[in-house]
Image (spheres, rainbow, N blue to C red):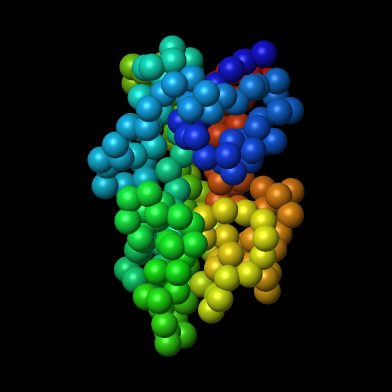
Length: 199
């Protein structure tokens, strides 16, 4: 079975990637299982940060690596929180602290258009000169209060364009079909097939 390191310790992401890659005989290993320390995300874009993370995981483990850098862009906030989505309320902030800060920033605003962005990078090895890079987005709006029990991150306050409920109300199957990460992963799998990485 092919083993690919996911440059993340996030259990939600690991579950999503494992579910979507299982059909291809690929085992996704969390970098945290292989003692890979998180690397500082010093890039200014999702692409730069994803490459930094994938390269670090590949270098430490010797395995091929996938990294994702994703976040929420809110039009009224000129694209914030963007690449800082995971630490919008400060380093080590919990999901609830991040989305509460965002709700406060939009207090009284009716302009609430937003989208999740995801960039995925696959590197065969740490010195891979041509990593596969795929990007996808998920359009929606920011709700006025958190709702739903599923999902992680900003899912409780993100209302997908296709629904009247929060992303956190969707089943994982439905979310995988619609989400920025689900769509980017479909593109990545297609690109990996075209390059003969798996069938």
